[in-house]
Length: 439
Image (cartoon, rainbow, N blue to C red; front, side, top):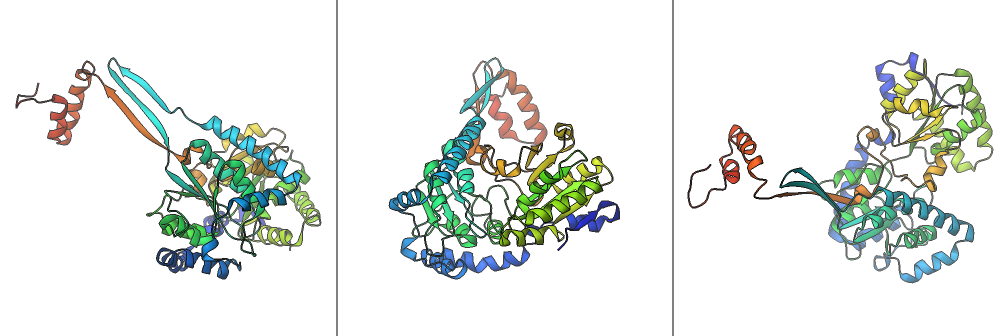
């Protein structure tokens, strides 16, 4: 299968819109199908979770054994080799350091005028479920990226929901990631049923205030359906990326980055966007070469993505048009391959993350750079931000006005209140006593 080439000059408005659309954008089929799953979990709790684990995950799951035990964490750590344990510790340290730097002040106050103080207080939310998918592999990095910021933010109860292995257990590396983060509550349930369990609670899985993390279209649909019951956090659907490359880009490194997100699954999106047709041809040749150094499953996924409407090579008239397409797409991951990547930053307004230069590989950012890799997908990077400590915090405004400070505010307050027709508002700043007249 060849790599699809999309020439912007040949596309009308409908063709361009189709190119920007994602597989997750049309989940109407899933929305209708998650309803019975949600209802079953709400009414039957653990029994439904176990049943769906056997049905959808083809796993040996029993209702009485959904929670990880302390000995499971010990066994998982022992089962892992030194290389992955060291890599996970390395990543955990950097993820924790980055998110500690994000933390706002507990309380700040500003003197707006003599005797008038206003400020803001930050507090952790009461509880959160971190969803760690398993559909196309095991993802301990997601466990680190979702749980560590929650712990840094001080959330009192952090739980992890993850699909079971075929034997009815929990992935060893995911369990160890939770231990590194300081999380002890891990439950084996995935898909729409996991979202329902977090929203309503079961005999084993606690009801929580929020759920975060990436997932399949089933998970995204369940989050949409339950958005009125539980805070579903930032949208994080199937993986997507754009590699923006100019004529100075190295074809081999560009191809390596193009394949990075394409191998996640056939529902991913991955594009090379460039104004250089010669570079595009060389990158296509490099991709064909690199497929010879990948496993059959990942080659299959990336071939499907790069050969279809959700991926391939986008040819722009110039780099200004290329940047315009990137902003319209608003990708989850944006890699800038150029000898001068900083020259593009001011032109790139919509992306979950921007990675600059040939050494800043997407995979480095995915695992060990420190910033969070749970990023807005489906075009939501236009208005949403990467997962951060702020997703686990809530803010309260704080005001303090002294008796000496009130007169300077009262007159203006009364003016607003009278204009908007609120008598009690006006009286509140007049501080009427014993039936006396307002000043």
